[in-house]
Length: 215
Image (cartoon, rainbow, N blue to C red; front, side):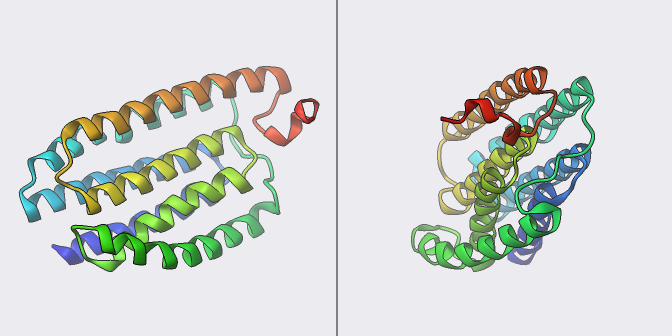
């Protein structure tokens, strides 16, 4: 079972890089949906390994909200705005993924050593992957100027936290899961509304064009 979880977490790392790097919004959203499906599969694998009822509830609620609702909501936003491809980010389409990948790997190598001291699940690779996905979300905020990419970066960031919580405290009460998912839904909806208003004002999702907001 540990090997399956290792494989799923490596695939989650790959999909986080795809969400960050892919230029077409639709492809990034599909990559996010695949990543979250892998997260649900890890919840189920941990449920079968440890028999923790909480993880079964986590997997059901995460599937409905994060695999189905959030991707469909973002695809609807993309269709409504009529946007297809992201504007060129800070450092260009080649440099920014390389920077994000390099620094995320470096920071994850430091973080997982801390996580493992507090984790119930002692396998190194999943804890490393949780740190990596979390950092890819952080670098998405820093390096991507597209409003929609920043929403997806938040989703990556949130998936990293979700994975680390499942590994470190999988016996947490179901209300913890409900709280995380509620935050995620409201954050995505609020940011999507802001993205629509931004696009209506600037004719683009590139936040670097809002030069009149600079102090």
